[in-house]
Image (cartoon, rainbow, N blue to C red; front, top):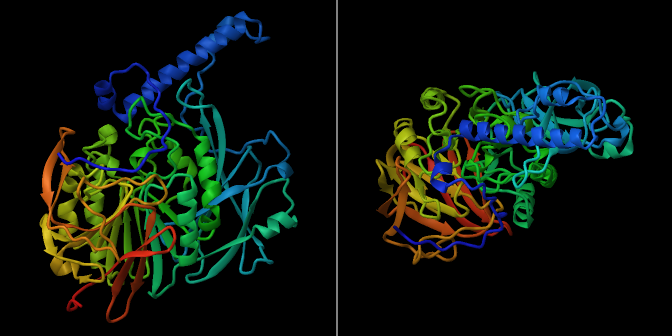
Amino acid sequence: MAAFSRGTSSEPAVPDFGIPEPLARRMTMAEQHEYLRAKMTRRRTLVTAGAVASGLLTGCSTADAADRPARTATPTAPASATSAAPGAAVTPFGRHLSFGADPRTQMRISWQVPAAVRQPYVRLGARPDALGQRIDAELRPLHTPGVEGVSPEVEQYYLHAALDDLLPGTTYYYGVGHEGLDPADAALRASVASFRTAPALPESFVFTAFGDQGVGDGAAAVDQQLLRERPAFHLHAGDICYANANGRGTTADGYDAAFWDQFFRQNEPVAQGVPWMVTTGNHDMEAWYSPDGYGGQLARFSLPDSGFDPRQAPGVYSFVYGNVGVVALDANDVSYEIPANLGYSEGRQTAWLERTLRTLRAAEEVDFVVVYFHHCTYSTSAHASDGGVRAAWLPLFARHQVDLVINGHNHVYERTDAIRDGAVGRRVPIGGSTDPSRDGTVYVTAGGGGRDPYGFPVGAKDSYEGQVNDAESLETFHWTRSRQPSSETVEWSRVRFRGFSYLSVEAEGGTAPRLTVSARTHTGQRIDHFEVRRGRAHA
């Protein structure tokens, strides 16, 4: 198997529970959830017993204390709540948008408050000084229990407002608040943000994408570049925040929910005006909240309900913007490398994917189909390629001629040639073009969103615009069902760059539709570009 070079890692040390690593690897997310529930229940029982013995609890007998239900990591049902502080003292932060199922008429506005509040709302208007319409918001409190050596105890409060029946192609202004906040307050007026709904008829637009963001200087620098792009929406290919620093889906995964507070503050300058369309990575499975690991994601995001089961798989959905159909998938369901949630949908996600691709490809208004998810279909970097993704989804991508696949997981930028039947269907050099109906699909690993960069197999040189080092073949591997790597020699790795980066895609319609795909670094330097055209002669 190929050796790899990679950058340094700043991930926190992983706590040791004394569980043999082979056993930890075999645990499903449901088993991890039960393990943590038992650990938290036992911890609460011991703490309560100690407090009673010390006389710290009054008016409560030992029997009463033993009968109290243990606080688990299961999220509390959304409900109104009374703030521990006056409403005027609670300042909203971390606004982030997402589309509903129809980006022309639906928007979801989400934000956070540091304490529970009454009657949260969004005010909406056609001008920043005329926010007349009021839309009630839903409060989703999330409790993270303290587990010694794993996570501090954290209370978080997320709010979500569903905006429906909007006008297509229209700019709206909004402000968020709750009972006790004065809408005329100068700070609130200064925080008014805006968004624009998708147009009724296709027109040219730009969207951006990356995975593996986290919190830090690199992530903030990439965010600044996104602001300059002014995208219609942003695709986040998973590993969103890294509150779960290990991300292997084992009992050894450390966790700090407070990272989410930092994440939403960091991204607010972009996400308050650009729909931030996330999907689910391995670091986003958080066993403390629910047996499937997705309770935290359900509390923090309001994503389109167009997937096969929005409550079970919030990171699975589709939408159409202009002439592009976009499909988000949860690769945890098919991953051989990290199988903690392998098969959790019992095939329903893959069946939904086939129906969705068939529908999008048949839609007259859709020229291009873009699919994004976390684990890599084709990559030579540290995590390499996931055989589970290939086995489950490659036949569908080929059958329905998917135009572009975007992944994260590996903290690099790497782009393939057009791949058809598992081999190079057409070489696509920097500046080249491809027709997926004849050549196959280009796969992009865009994992440079902010975490420390990885490397490539020893001897594989970076190759990007201005520094091209073509390689005839590279030695790498892919993960198998037995969770063992299988070596392979590949010829499809066309562009490679280690460093912070993001993808920018311009979609054009009309009689000659095309996607112009570019990759840029956190300083704005272009490192790759190519075109996707359907049914036209190659440039």
